[in-house]
Length: 77
Image (cartoon, rainbow, N blue to C red; front, top):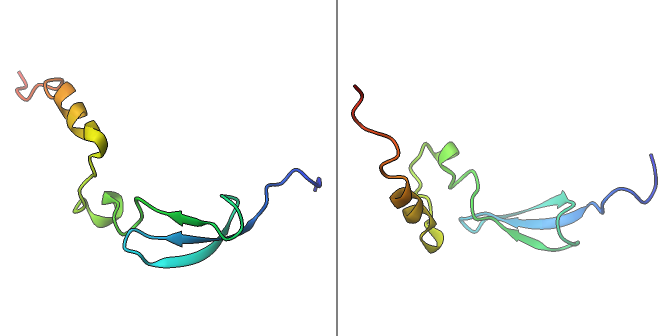
């Protein structure tokens, strides 16, 4: 294995959306940094069965829905 080509692999703290924490090793950030998750298995619809709502940050979701509301036609002939 070549020396000096691999990223630093160190310990960081992960904070889930519900506030629970765990420690893991990663190449992200620096030793001892904290990663706060916006989406995790406790809040993402893929794991929760769709019960969680998507956060509309700065109106992006509503703008998308408004822009493409008539794109697909409901009546099929």
